[in-house]
Amino acid sequence: MHDEKRLPLGKQLLYQLLCLLIAAIVLYPILWVVAISFDARDIQRPTELIPPEFSLQAYQRVLTQPTSNPVSFLTLAKNSLLLASGVALFSVLIGVSAAYIFSRFDFRLRKVLMVAVLGVLMMPSIATIAPLFVLLNKISFNTGEIQFNLRNSLLGVGMAMISGALPFAIWNLKGYLDTIPKDLAEAAMIDGASFNQVFIRIILPLARPALAVTFFLGFLTGWTEFAISWQFLTNPQDFTLSMALWNMTGQYSGDTPWSAFAAMALMLSLPVALVYLAFQRQIVSGLTMGSVK
Amino acid sequence: MSTTTKTLRGTGYGSQSKTSQIGQTRTIILYLLPAFLVMSIITFYPLFYQLWMSTTDFGVANLRQTAPPPDSVGLENYIDIFTGGLAAKVPKFDFVYLIGFNLWWTFSNVVIHVALGVAIALLVNQKGLWFKSVYRAIYVLPIILPTLVVATVWRNMFDPASGALNLGLAQIGSLFNIPPETFAIRWFDQIDRPIAWLPLPLSYFALLITNVWLGWPFMTIVATAALQSIPGDLYEAAKIDGANSPQQFWNITLPMLRPAMVPATVYGIITTFNLFNLIYFTSRGGPLRQTEIMVSTAYRLVNEQRLYGVAAAFCVMIFFILLGLTLLTNRITRATESYDA
Image (tube, rainbow over all chains, first blue to last red; front, top):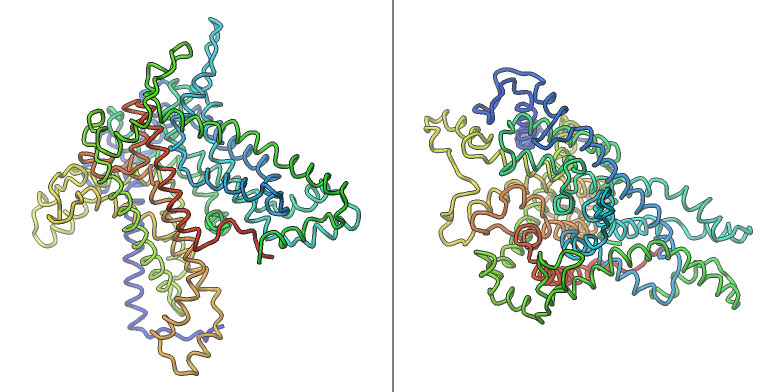
């Protein structure tokens, strides 16, 4: 360890000043959003930095019906939750076994398959939106009573999102599984455990933190996904929170007051912010790991 | 060390008899099957379909199930994009500017993020600094907010009349008797370049401010973790050898930060190059498409112009540009190698 020497007072004050300045810059937009979300006046745009009166009416408005679309906050949140957790869970569940094989074995097609996964991984999800839109749009039926188009459904959006989430899950999990000592599995096999037993009884429990972080990273992406859902979905009952937030700003906002937009932005952020804070360290290492290994 | 010997050692199938090799192959196939089956259908097949689409004039008329297939146009879509012929369908489309802007956008952001991130990590890591944990808790806020939220909030921050930026500047200005009208800055709509000889609109600088606000904390977190893992003995030994602070910084701190900062920088480059949410929600590519990046252009080709064939060609090009970028960075990080336990 270093010697815990004291900073000279002059330096201390200078550094404090710098740190405070940075803190002020970081906090400025956040405090501003929080402030205008409590604006008591029912006006479209604020005229001062801090509203003169505070109330919860913007939150009330958002919770009942955030946009001009006939859809409630609860439905939007349910759709976002369903998409995010569905995509994250599915990609972790079927990704982990593939990740383990990549981490443990060398086989003839290993390099080819890994490059394929990596190649897809570097594609932004928007870069495959055209073929996914066209292909999923082909799957539809109309029985008169039920009209179904896979493209125009949460299921279709979920499939399009898994297209990118699954390669990411495989890559990210492989990075973690690589760090589990191989002797562990070997010792168990010498003791007579089968490959499946090793995987289920030893590897999966050890990988639990990695599974959780990969799930959460997938969830984060799904929770704030915008481009695919905006392109695919047309029925307001299927809309997500992100789409509603976009509807509340800019050319589609109509007469949405900024206070309602701010309340919506904060409510959208809160759940992910809380979990992020809880998992912060693992997430940061998970993110960089995904790009190196 | 070659990959082959390293991973084979750990297979767990110690004997190389024929039966166990078959068993091993079966296990590999079984474990890979679910993921690769799903990816074949919803990842790889669409990618090849995209390749075919890019050689057609796929449009809205070809969407319906009963619609005729699109006409093949060969490489026309690619040629249109390269030579600027696309400007006939997409006003103000300028491919050379677009690529140049996208690369400059990435470069300028990542350089500032890394430099600021490391500098602030060093500052907050000073021994004996008061309120360290308070600052750390505050500085993490930009990353825990979804980019989507950050982007929409900053869009409003930059509003000429009601935005917190102009209002804040006016408040500061009033201390110096500057009239508030001075700060009716039209951040995203001003056409005149702020710096005459630089072909970048004011909108770019507004985006840069937003993304610097958003981007440095991640680098600070990575750098802080690396700083804390540097053994203190190194500095003590250096001190005994008579090295001063700048020498210690250049010879110990910086080299020890490098292994952590290189992958973080690679991650930053890829993310910033594709930062759709920020561009689409904040400047919306404006004014006059001058702050559009590749992915936001691709999205508009699908979502607004509905030129699916052209969009496919555009995305195939994005793929190759990213491939180049990744290969370049892979040479540094050797991403495909398996972990050396």
